[in-house]
Figure 1 (cartoon, helix red, strand yellow):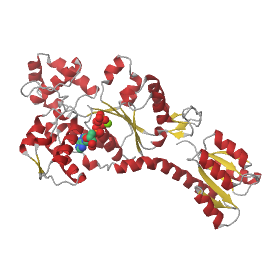
Figure 2: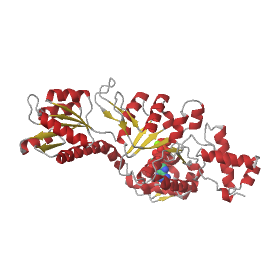
Figure 3: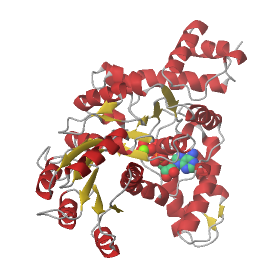
Length: 464
Ligand SMILES: Nc1ncnc2c1ncn2[C@@H]1O[C@H](COP(=O)(O)OP(=O)(O)OP(=O)(O)O)[C@@H](O)[C@H]1O
Ligand SMILES: [Mg+2]
């Protein structure tokens, strides 16, 4: 974590020296000034985590300084020192937004304790905004539904990797549950009590994304009225989810790479390096390898992000999960909407099973919600289903589903994996049917494995 910056304001040189010595020894960075006016100038031009000010000073006193500080830097904590054991002044200070107050004289231990607490609380406050939204989303690991081989392999993977802090790249079509898996990794890791911070790389213009990620110093650009703590800093000791990483522009990719390598960065317009320890999870529904080939994505960044690849199979490749998912959403939507639907009609279930779900689990969730809200009895019928027109067209029979805009490489992989699965992972038979050599087949599988593209990985031992 970055060393906290503290500004000390006191007209007595002895007091300034005392504080400086006590706090530098505890690992803080200290600037000390002799009066309120000099203090305000410091606060205006720098970004302090904490200000410790005397109450009674010639000129600007502690309370006035506190008031001015809160106007300029809302997130700077202020501690007031007072020589008079007056409850009234203390209450006044706290009411005006002071983090704490301390009665003079005090020992180095006492001030250290007060400082530590104020800095901790200030940090919590920043994190709380995010934690609150997490709680509002009602996250619960138990809410992950699905027992298909593909999903079980993912649960296993989550358990294995949760203890490490290696970067994870989660791939999957839109709506497959990438964010849910990212949360599951965080909440089953030792970092679970620290923040889970998310940022969508596709949603913001590059300069905004940069200051969201790294924060900025006051005045670093036209709209930087105040200092801003970036998501990276907020995710310290926790997890940072970089959603839709493929959409990050190349300039920012280089900056991100630097942070991943050096584990420190500067706020936009800042010069102080800030240390961070955040586990990085990124997601994408794009073909990153292709983006690399086309020069749109840095290969070195890709290697940093893709230490552990997880690929979530699209829903149409794990139809066995569909009944459980549909029941799960039935229950959830019934509760949320105060309805009493309890069952899904057989015909309705048949329709759900035959749809190709281009929008994956999210599409299913929306479909069930609509059906639950509009249905009047206790059984959900297909009357209110409305399926996405953007269907994944399947060839006749039990053939392979190919997504739209699929590349030749992807189509080949889907075909190979489908055929292999259909023939119980029998490589000889699969190679025969596809008219390729067993060796080519093995090489392809190895390639997919390395690229993290094996969802239902065929087991080597089972092959003849
Ligand atoms: N296995 C699952 N069990 C229960 N709910 C799921 C599962 N997978 C996904 N969902 C639900 O489906 C919805 C979409 O999931 P999520 O947002 O994680 O998908 P995503 O892959 O991040 O989508 P996008 O690419 O659009 O960002 C969420 O409401 C999520 O809770
Ligand atoms: Mg998502």
